[in-house]
Length: 182
Image 1 (cartoon, rainbow, N blue to C red):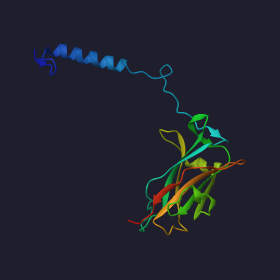
Image 2: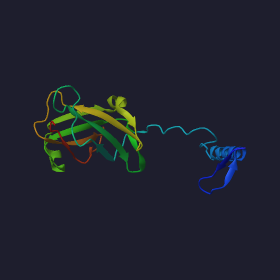
Image 3: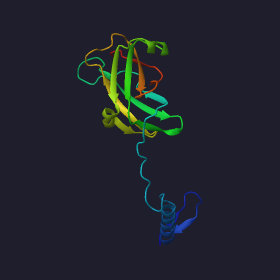
Image 4: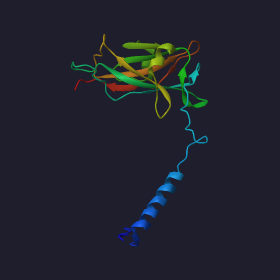
């Protein structure tokens, strides 16, 4: 009969005893696993459309992206989360428009009263194809390309704006993005 020595305590086990111990450990670890709701896994939360949005969170990479074989950046991918103050989870749009305002250079909130260099606008219907889900919750992931009118500066500022059917628009914080060709 072969003997196996335990590395941690130095105790010697016969091959049968070691097998029994290993099987017992495996059974205990498997029995400790469980799922919610009586054996079935919980369904992922569904998107909750809302007519009211209280906060807009815009997320972008720090630099614009090159999406083709030609040198120079072509646009920037954005992720937008929409929140209601009475709900910890992001909501999706039922109505209204989500717009992105691009300003040349680094600007603050004071630029919101000036004409943007470029604007992209999406209806709630158009945004359905951009709906995604991350660990935070539902969001819209949209590539904003400047095919017709590329910025002339090394930096841009991007702001997301939700325009409800009625009421005041809701703005994200301005986000500065580098557009230098590397």
